[in-house]
Length: 68
Image 1: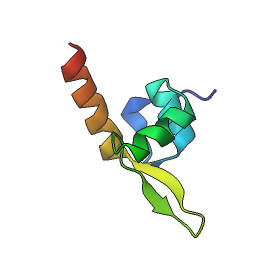
Image 2: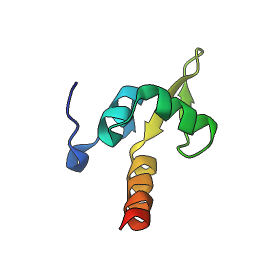
Image 3: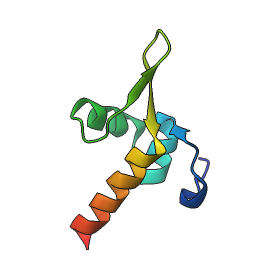
Image 4: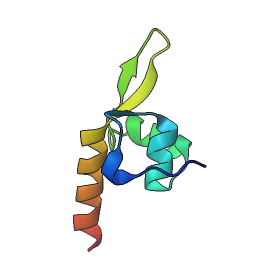
């Protein structure tokens, strides 16, 4: 599993990258997308999911405020 540096995140992240960063399953990332807890952007004809860096950082900020 590749470790992701939060200080050097790419502009657009894959499901695997988000899962590694949040330490959750890729399936959970997909489920949270369906529940709109994380909002994916869709790319290409297959509709692959990607996540904007700002979206993930905002999610982490809100989660930290909730947890402590």
